[in-house]
Structures are given as C-alpha cells and as structure tokens.
Image (cartoon, rainbow, N blue to C red; front, side, top):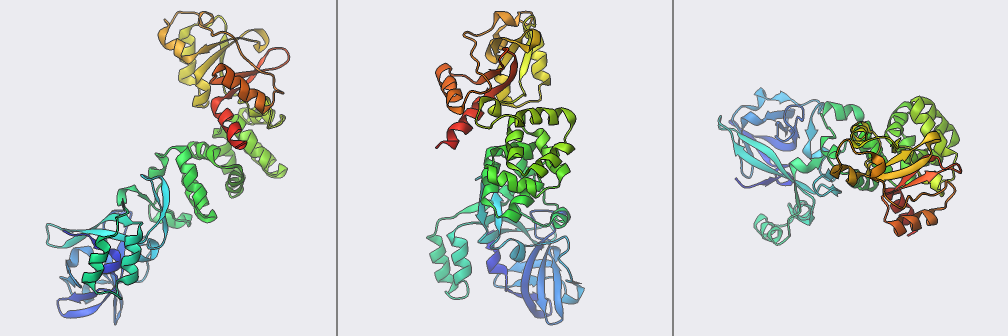
Length: 413
C-alpha cells in the first residue's frame, strides 16, 4: 500500500457505521507497547474527543472509516503514556542516528498494512526532514490534490527511516513514561555524539546528555568544546558530575575542572573516589599549556625484567584510554624511565621474551615544563603515538598521547 503522510491524515472526516461523527484530531502511539505502530486515532466529535482504536480502523481514503460505533470508543482525557505525532513530532527536532545529525520533522509518513482481522494498522515508516514535507503541509488546503501531488513528485525525498530516529524529550519523568531510551545514541562514536549535542538548544542538550551512561557521557564530554563542557557539568548535581569525571582521562578531567569555578571544582573533587581524585589533583597543579598539563597519568609501565606475557596480562586489565595502550614503558628504581616497547612488537614476540629485548630506539621523552610547541615538534620529528614525560630525576610521571597533540594543533588553527 502507498504511504500516507500524517499531515494528510490530520483533519480527515471520520465515519462510524452510522455515518460521519467527527474529524481526526491526532494520531497516537504508545511507545511502551509498540514504538513504531499507531495505537489509536484521537477523533474530535460533538460529544468530546474519543479514541478510535487501531483495531477498529477499516479504510482511510479521503476519510477514516471505523468498524465500531463511536459510543464504544474510549473517551480521550489525557495523553499520559502517549506520543501524539502531530503535537510531539511535527516541527520538532529529532536526532538522525544514521546521518549523525539533528533534523527538523516536517512530516511523518505512515505505512498502512491490513491485519489478519481485516483492520488497517499503521506503521511509522519515515520522518520527512526535507522541503517536500514542508510544502505538502503548506499547500495541502490551498492547491488541488492532483496539482500538489504532481509538484511533490518533482521535489527530492529527504526521508529518515523511523528505526534511525532518536526522540528528544526534555522532561525526565515523561521520558521514562514514554520509554524513550538512548540505545541508538550509545552506538554512535563520541565525536559524532558531541557534534549532535553541540547543535541542540541548552535544554535539549542537557536532556540528551542525561540519557547517556557514565562511560559514554565521559567519552562524549571529552569531545565537546570547553564552554559547553562547563555548561553541561554545571547543569548536573555534584555526585552525577563526579561519576562522569571519574570516567574521563585524568588530563581531560583536569582541564575540565580547571575551567569550572574553584568552588564547583572542589565540590566535584570531594565526591570522587580517592585514587581518581589524587590523579586529577596532581595534574591541576600544572599549567595547561605545558607537557605536564597535557599529560595523562593513565599509562602502562612494567619493570625492565618483565616479559611479554606480563605485558599481555596488563593489557587485559588496563582501564585507561585506548590511546595510552600503544606503548608499554619500562621503569626501574624510583620509576626511572628505562625504555619503551611498542604494542606491535608484543604481537610478534613469544610470551617468555623479555620486554627489554623489544625496546625501541632512541628513547624519546620530554620534561614537565616543555611547552606545547616543543611537544608537537617532538611528535612530528619522531612519528610518535605517545610521549613520556619525566621529571628532573628521570622518573616517569605521565604520557602525552597523539590525541592530545591533535587538540593542541586544533587550538591554534
């Protein structure tokens, strides 16, 4: 069957077996029952609004015809638990998770299907986010139907399959009632999710961010520009903010807390677990534009006597960022840096091989006070993935990863 636009259905006359009894006011779905099928049509009648159940719809062709009498339909008194397509979706912003962007809903296309009981059931098929949907709504009651159909045929489609749509609901309690989840967003890359969040209005931005789990929220927050980071964190309570900051790379967490007010930063630190708090507090003591200010304390280090099997076991248990996993550092007494082993060499070596036999030369490092320009030059000269930062005694204090250098370069563009 041909698709039917929501804008074409709204306002249609409705008939029960006795004759015409009203007009279509709204089309409703109940997401808890089925997030992709129309549950009922809200019909405006002389005696008040009624709910025409999907099972009683028989024909939609210039009008909606029902198999049961209007007096058998439930009175409509509240949209509790319902998503009204006209009110809640038309002209609203949604997230196209396939296109990874925010779009405006100009119309919705419904697919009619004949059920085994003879009723006409409607499935949400597409969201129209292009000019065709807007023109259809604008000219529907102005231009004859045949002329409008011919005009719309010349306009390119810009339809998004319903399964790729993520709804935005700013009311947390209603989000729960409507069973609006973030499952689709959780599958997006944090950088794409950050771009989407940055395109939203403040209330919508906070609503979407609140639906993410702590790990995904942390990864996404690291990709968001600093001013919006601050805005998002300031919209949370201290405990929630601390849970997310704990999941961030220590260097990114330190940069974020440094941008907050001293009072807010201290309140969040107070809620953090002792080890994570200590890691971040150490980094807060350094200037942001130095090597120490850019480094992370999440790195992998073993003694020079360790073997490949030890390194593999450490890799299995490492909870730091992926960027820090490209190199394993060898340290001696007092954490003095002795060597660096690329991850690629572990793959080719036997488990009993000593890591000291796999070190790369030369061993490149920098001091904590090195400026951003010097750090970028070292990465470029030696084609590094990570750069160890050592103190005046040669002790390993942290590492700078390639993504940090990219951030440095972007900040100077």
